[in-house]
Image (cartoon, rainbow, N blue to C red; front, side, top):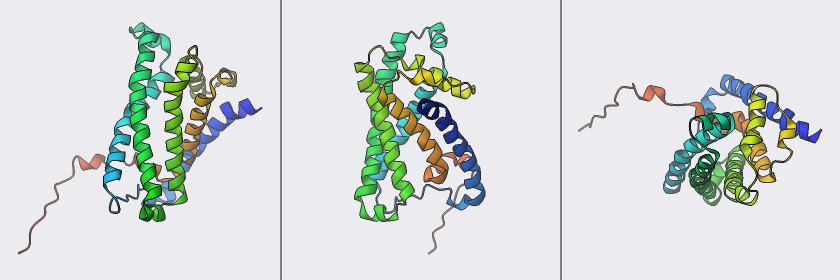
Length: 224
């Protein structure tokens, strides 16, 4: 029953909250759909941490998409062998994971050590910061440590199969039984952040400034 809850019920529950929660948040709180920048309080750490986070999160996200949703035999068909793939996942993925972790650590450190920022932070801000830091740490640990300890483990034969099963509404909880603990924690924490997403400042990720490209220039005139 626990396995069924963790790998079938819990993921779908988090996805449902993610979808319904965003609809609810947009309908009742459009003016709160913001990142609530604290740049005016402290700028240097925010700039460095944000740059590291945003530059690394894109390749990390794309790496997860390829690893979880593209079957291994598809990549083999275009010449990407298992050895090449794992080298890329280990070194390229590991590098961007460490950059992401460093950026997330700096942003979290800034939030808890700067008294003014800490006072302006809500409980959800703190939860998001620490949870993202934890998820990133577990991902880096699983990639760089667990993969080197449990050398016969291949997440593309277990976690990826399970994720594709979720996408096709046919998840097999048994596939996750032999997955190392660090990977399990990383996966469950990731689904948890999806459930919390609509109730936090993470919603600003969908507010892409497409209109900025075609916006007219702002003209400033000096008054004598």
